[in-house]
Length: 71
Image (cartoon, rainbow, N blue to C red):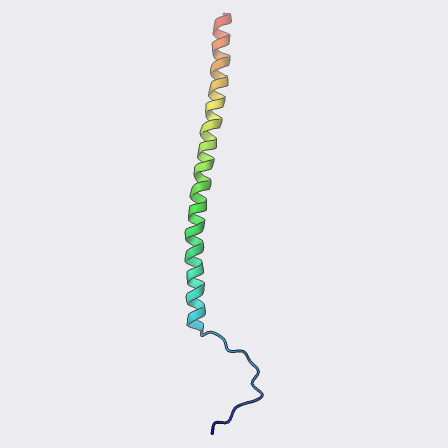
């Protein structure tokens, strides 16, 4: 009959390769998720830039047009 060590109170843990595999999956998932987030943020910043340039160009054009009518 096998003798059991009654003093061993440590919990069983997953092997190192399993922990590294799960960590790799999380890293790849985070990379994919962050790439989508950065792409969306980049497009939002570009759109805001276009809107700001359009508004500034509108007001510059309005000022130039009114100045040319006065002269």
